[in-house]
Image 1 (tube, rainbow, N blue to C red):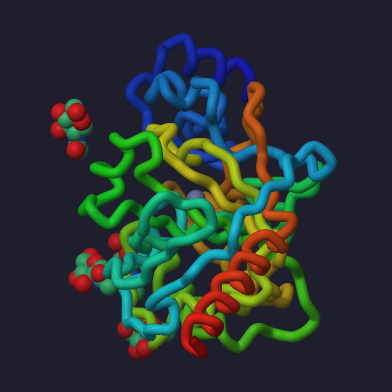
Image 2: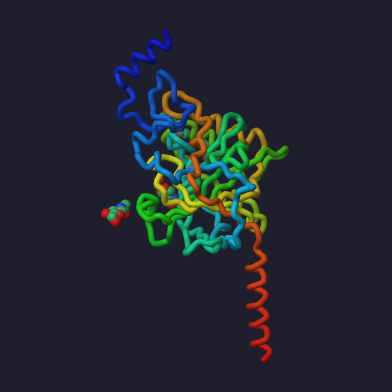
Length: 300
Ligand SMILES: *[C@@H]1O[C@H](CO)[C@@H](O)[C@H](O)[C@H]1NC(C)=O
Ligand SMILES: *[C@@H]1O[C@H](CO)[C@@H](O)[C@H](O)[C@H]1NC(C)=O
Ligand SMILES: *[C@@H]1O[C@H](CO)[C@@H](O)[C@H](O)[C@H]1NC(C)=O
Ligand SMILES: *[C@@H]1O[C@H](CO)[C@@H](O)[C@H](O)[C@H]1NC(C)=O
Ligand SMILES: [Zn+2]
């Protein structure tokens, strides 16, 4: 009966014009377009350089990518946190900036959002050697000259996303309290809440543990999947306990469906290289040479 009804519904073409959604939202009664059908909404989603990807650590190309320089990451802000029907999103003013790390120019942070599983189960977008982590945070940056992500995706390197993977820990991560405490206020799509004072530094591991990362060229992981993203996925992870990871599963999509498994499946690399910032010895020795030159100049 169920199968017959589904068949009838699909024969009537009820999916036409439907919004995009994650696989966990698709059912016979809820005819939205899951990841396999995103290319029908936005053809770029079926293109060759898509994200996320599985990172095979024994195939990465080790490169002398230098560490990031983070500016304004320590500034506390009171942003709006929103359930936008697809994820939890925090907008940022753009005064936090990254450079270095092989980027050709400065990029400013405009948004933070998350991808998660079900009650702390697998939920990251990027996987490492096939392992899916319980959650992934994306800090979306755009070149400083642009005023929105919409404008930046016109540029093939207009967007730089920093991806952080999470692992489960025994103890709660106190620095995440303002985010976790805001979740019960944004259970439904369209709900907004004001975040207590939080800085980007509170949400990421300390800078000195972030010199090891993976880098490749890819896309936004939601439609329209624009291929304008310089991706960074850090090797070090953020620790939250089971209760904190599970708190995200208490939110809802439209139509009373639990907001869980908010990730796109991994996409083929199609010959792309993934670089790894393996060794920073070159940059360290450059610093040494330069400082030796300055010292010898000063002592002349
Ligand atoms: C976030 O967006 C809201 C409007 O939705 C705006 O009032 C607020 O100033 C923005 N916050 C930042 C930090 O840009
Ligand atoms: C994207 O680029 C095209 C052509 O260069 C331009 O016409 C369009 O206005 C740009 N879109 C945005 C949002 O900047
Ligand atoms: C949640 O909403 C209530 C009622 O509007 C408010 O008093 C409370 O401070 C909010 N909590 C957080 C963490 O935003
Ligand atoms: C969340 O959205 C629902 C439906 O739009 C609304 O009834 C409810 O008051 C909102 N809750 C908060 C805390 O804004
Ligand atoms: Zn994302």
